[in-house]
Length: 78
Image (cartoon, rainbow, N blue to C red):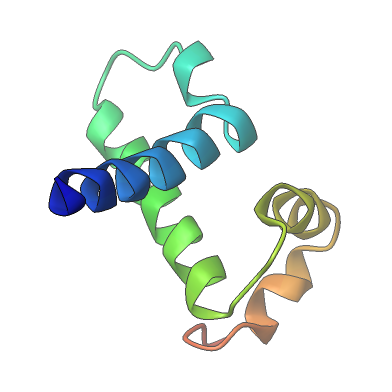
């Protein structure tokens, strides 16, 4: 039972952020949606590795200030 609850918690944490912050349920991407999903997963993983507390606010801030993205650990600017 505990394993099922733990798995459900991980699923809810991931899907809730994708649905609410990234509006994934409203997405109309029909051709190669896996590419879009991979990019979204990468963005979320980078934010989580950097221990961002409010993902929605951070996504908004990064849209306004694109140079902020290069300040995260794991991202290198050429």
